[in-house]
Image (cartoon, rainbow, N blue to C red; front, top):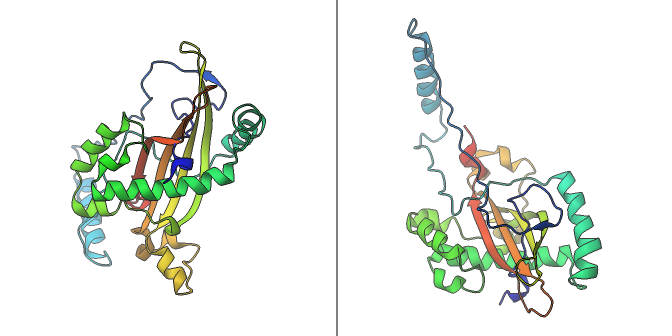
Amino acid sequence: MIRNVARCVPNSRKDTFVIFKKQQTAMRTISNFNITSNYSTKSNKNHRNASVYEVCKRLLSSEGEKPRRKLPQLMNFPEIVWPSLLKSMRNFILSTFIIKPYMDGDFSIPQFVKGSKKAVEVVSNKLSEGDLKSLEGLVTNDVIPDLQKSVSLMSLAEREQLAINIDDIYFSFPYQLGIIFDDSNNQKRFVEITMVYHSLKGLSMMRSRGEEPPLNMGMMPEYQGKISVCNYRFIREFTKGVESQWTVNLLNHFKPADYLD
């Protein structure tokens, strides 16, 4: 169904767009920083101030609800929210002067972005339903075990948050394009594209009523919990004589509101 959208993704393992040799190395992970505070034993003033601050914070909460649980990570993939000017320029050079003339004469970033949105809708809804068997052919085989493990640890409410409606996506862009040459295996060639999607749950229904969300909705509590960001990395083989389609080889969903104090 989404065959024209299943396999392209930039390589987040390296921060460069240039062509590079494929290596048998694990993807670089972002280390977690644990920030701790050292309180002086000479004075309990800091303790009292911190306690008062926390109590006030709870009392002044608009709804007095328990803190929202952070949406569990699907895969070990650094969260990407906004485009990079430098990477955008490199993406244009790669797509215009390498991919289109030498790999795929019909390649077009706007068309790829359009098709990739449908892929996100299908994959995210299958994840939400817990139907991972249906992901075969849409994601690479090595991805499925990781997704099975992550989804099994989620509550029903958390899984429901994974589902993305294509009409709820209000902003999307290719973050990074990458080309991989594997000289050790018959000159295999791959293209990877990392995509970022911003969605607002219920946006399509709002627009059907003739309403539009405010531009500053990210600052408004009534919208913050409905905003999701998805990072999907697509890959496709372009080795001469090989028929291939775009598939997802890395993905993650998160809510920016989970990172607010």
